Amino acid sequence: MAGEKKTPEHGKASEKSPRPQRARKNPVRPKPLSHTRRKVGDAPSPSALARLVDALAEEGIRFQFAGMTAAILQGVPATTLDTDIWLELPERRYVKALDIAKKLGAEILARTVVALNDDTLVNFLYRIDGLKTFADEYERAEVLEWLGRQIRVLPLQRIIASKKYIRRPKDIAHLPLLKQTVKLKKQSAE
View 1 (tube, one colour):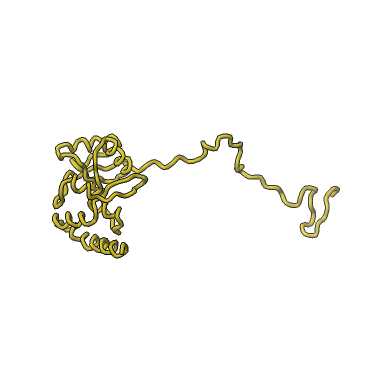
View 2 (cartoon, rainbow, N blue to C red):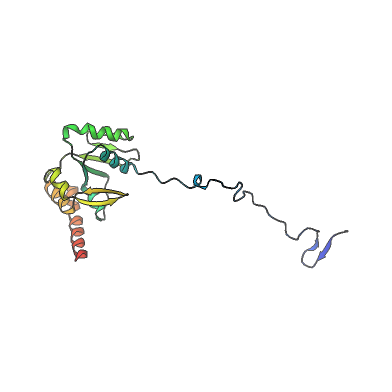
């Protein structure tokens, strides 16, 4: 045929280039970006627990993490099903804490227990058996950085004291792990 060339590799070739040019199905950037700030992802929103902590602080309610939550935040390798938050509120004013949680979308499960909107269980505590008053324990609390916030947690020795006093089977089961963590922390500090 006229206009066609023979090539040793392909037999006949057309006047076009030997390989067809492929176009992208989806162009990388179909339109120029004039406002890149709109394309950057938003910062992740704080967790439901962090929002609860912020709301308690905004209301002026002093609190500290207690129980195994406080232990885990201090490095104890364990898990827990709920988050214990000890509030500086008289027990008869428990409704105030429930109202704060409810405004954040929590479901009230009991007088002291709520399920946050991400299903995190929170147990509000108004006293802890075997320990001193909230004010005394608050002064001795460990201050930790947690999700960009300064929080207070019951020290491991005080968690041990409470668990020894209460003596529920699960508390007794936690004692060896808590004591070993205290021992390891002392050794690493030396």
